[in-house]
Length: 334
Image (tube, rainbow, N blue to C red; front, side, top):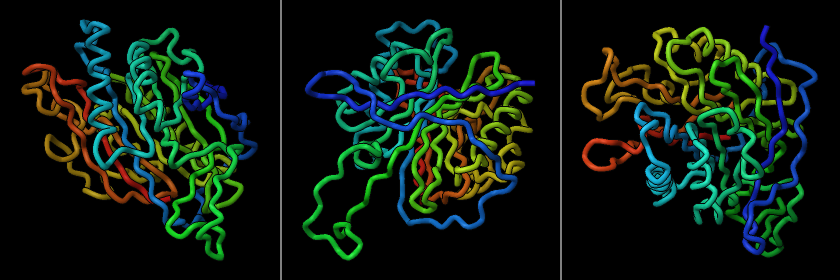
């Protein structure tokens, strides 16, 4: 019987004066003392939107032949696609991050100035595995509970907030939870204090589920992720990343657990090259009879999807894409 293990992790901000990443003061994650048997029915939305981009940046058949220089360059190009322009996300989930790609992310000036990040304090999550996940959160939208409030005395209304302000979401804790996996996959979870249900948190879960022909493991992994969204003190959340949904049965996993698949909710359940596919897109004929598929997903509970789109990678030269996965950009209401 598999028993998932949780370990507290950190979120870090880049200290420009010290020229290093510094862990934020957050709560230490504690085990849930109860589990709900049903979804919370009384959660109200507060009408605040968050945008999330999720991208498996390097898990591809040709990675083994890539040099470190090529991996770093592809990482930079994907960050360019994500961060430049008017739709830079509030939340960024990266999967398939090798150690050299982690360094590229942490050294990027835009990341250092605009984001809080997981896994800057050490490389524990990257030991004994070819790649891992990283979560980045906009420092304009998220804040440590111990960060001194900004002075906003001028222009306050009766509520104590400046007119037009979009108050920051308060972070609670961060942890990784092991999943049943041949490849040592886990779930990277950020708990955020829920403004709609004080005393609760909503969860941001970054995942890279089991690869290849392993539906039974993915089914158990999704079951455990669903349990995380049902734990006492949790009012819901979003799970996004590479679901490796290659088996026909994968298509019903989300629905079976009563979770909302953002793409299906907004675009319907069609699948194929032009209907939300995130893998095998634009690469010509695939081997072994495979077809383009919607391997990557954004699913949620207690939150409301507003829009979602596929972000296609560019190419190095005429043939090699930056990643064999497309990214997903989703906006949802808390």
